[in-house]
Image (tube, rainbow, N blue to C red; front, side, top):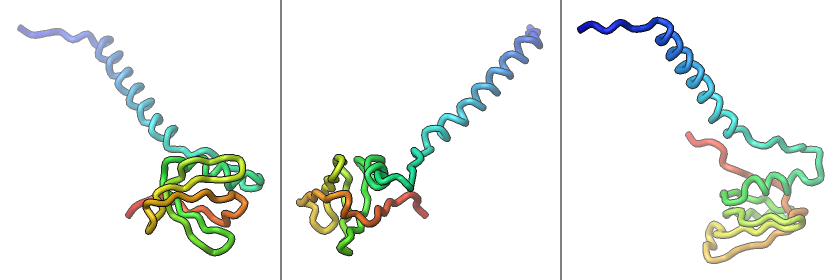
Length: 109
C-alpha cells in the first residue's frame, strides 16, 4: 500500500524544523555572552569579581602578592576567596581597593 504525502504538510514540517534549528542555534550564544563591564567605572573591579562568584580566579594585589582561589562572596568593599592555592584550608578576605588585577581562565587548549 503506497502512502500519498501531502506537499503542504511536508513544507510545513520542513519550515518548523528550520525555524526551531535556527532559533536553537542562538540560545547558547545568548547564554555564553558575558555581561559588559564599564571599564571607566570605579566599580569595575567589584563588578568583575561579582561575575566570578563560585569560580576560580587569581587576584594580584597592590602589594604584589598573588591569591588564587574560589571567589565566594563579594561585598561593596571586600571579597572573600576560599580554597586558596597552596593553603586549601584557609580563606581570605581582601579589600577590593587592594586588588590590582583579576586573572581568570577563559579558555583551554
